Length: 536
Image 1 (cartoon, rainbow, N blue to C red):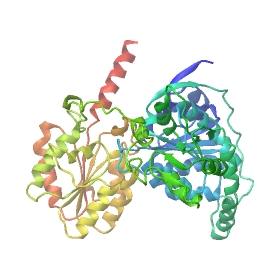
Image 2: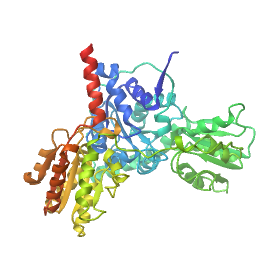
Image 3: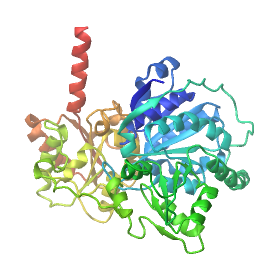
Image 4: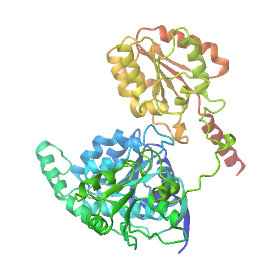
């Protein structure tokens, strides 16, 4: 059978299309972004008119996907791990409402924080919600799980989480395709009150969710994705979760692993296989990306003192990604350390692109803020967050999406005036609007800089939900139109930028400055595409 060379994220997108999906809902976030982009460009998805436009944030994405499931169609919501925090309210409650059409939530975790604020492990969210999890060990499984996850969701009656990590998301392997399934027909829930979480109904549905837990365990015990691979050497048993199975196998390329191995790629944990491993082995080593979820669970499973090794006992590092060397070291193998990394190829900090409009805004801001002292600029998450680094060192916070405006308001409430918030156009639409409403309602003395590069530039230049609407949104929220100021951030406009910043920092109330210039990378791509089309 012919195989296609796909990234893990592409395998998920293709699997979802082939599984009869009718729509994907997402907000861009590395390492999950390319799932939706792949679907947007896929010929079959275009032919079938599958929904694939970006949502304003992860909460709206999840809720809209739930609405499609309500109507009986198969749907997927995609986000990175911190995006699930934004969607958590809807996510947790959807486990209680259950589904109608199959619903797969794909979450891309980022161990080692390659492009994230934390390393949180989304399996804990799934455990909290008490729903099944699929965790592929390779790209083929990512495809298969995305394709078959809808049927699992419909069988279990709840959303199913598909959890991938950065290393799997952004590496390639051959993937064998399977027949494309038809989309579901439109159908209403059999129980007209299924999605009505009034307390009396919610209590009944919560009991039903609890009653399903044994069935979910049985599904894991019978899953093809969970495999017990026997070994002759019983001094150690190994549990490999998802991609860590590959790290183990790379230590045994020329020989069979002598220890019994339980490969776990579907949760809840398969109790029958766990009991077998514990009964046969003296010690158990747990290999898992992220937090020590399985390691912690096993300490409750086994009451007879079986030693559990992993991230908690120091056999493996408590933070960061695993790799074959770390696994080999935990197995007692001699690991070749190699020579130190030469400075010329060592990792360098990221920087704003040359010619980026954020640079001009920061230069003007720094000149004005020099009169007030440092520590007054609260930032959000985007390319502009690099303003924390030299040579600008302008911003003083980066916590979560939307926190710039609310933190600036809190600082102003405490008496730190002036207080400045820096937020991007897409992040403003994602999570900044409600914070600005709070500030307007209390007439807070803050200056909000909405640095508008007309795209979600940090994740590849996707369309911003706020494009063409920022001024009208701010005015609709109650910001005085006289203090909604738009300017083009260019070096030739530096004096005007400085004057504008100085005026608005001196204003006692909520003011909004919008430095607007298209992202230079997006502009470059647009011009290349226009040139290409003109030549054709």
